Amino acid sequence: MRTAVLASGGGSNLQALIDTQARGALAPAKLVVVGANIVGCGALARAEHAGIPTFLLKHKDYPSREAFDQAMVETLRSHQVELVVLAGFMRILTPTFLSAFPHRVVNIHPALLPSFPGVHGQKQAFDYGVKVAGCTVHFVDSGTDTGPIIAQAVVPVLDDDTEDTLQQRILTEEHRIFPAVVKTVAEGRVRVEGRRVRIETPKGLTEARLRSIEGV
Ligand code: GRF
Image 1 (tube, rainbow, N blue to C red):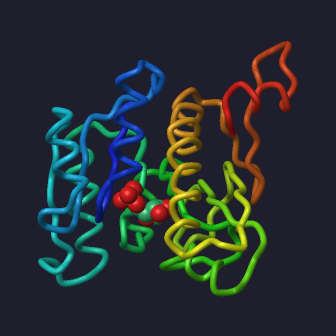
Image 2 (image 1 turned 90 degrees about the vertical axis):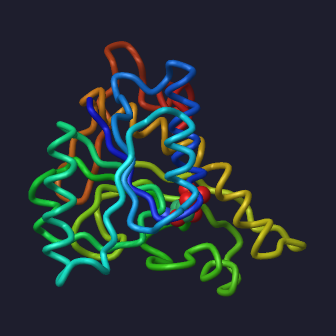
């Protein structure tokens, strides 16, 4: 499945996807292009280093969100993209974009949704004083981090944690579950039923056994 990654920042999640692909463990997903909206962001450099084509579309160059999204859709279509992965892409997508890729846009969020949506999810959780935190991979809808949840991973919040140590612990889990989910979506084993997302298990495996094998 021809897969695009969109990013705005350092790109450590992109790197996890690239490394998983290099190990042969991302197929049938194939990273065909990386797009960014921020000049010089680390994600672009990581993609170039891995030999993946890139594009840069600056949202500030467009008169509206819809015009920006339309340009993104056209660029992604020119690469025959079938699946869009948001890895730290700091733009809210409009229906112009989402209707072009129905149930084919996934995002990673650094908190256990529906708690702490929006920016700095880890900091929001830390400041709130929660005892467990984590990350969520979900389908994207037109809300802010509101789409159906595909997978979550939980980490403890320790007494001597700082925002930084907690963020790192969450990030390690992001790098583990995001590539696993991208692979599973590309395999066509993910079904959305209203708000619930089901992962079809191959014959003979229980869901618990499958999760322990796949790590999600
Ligand atoms: C991650 O924390 C991700 O959950 C959030 O943005 C951050 C991106 O980090 N959506 P990176 O650019 O992948 O390092």
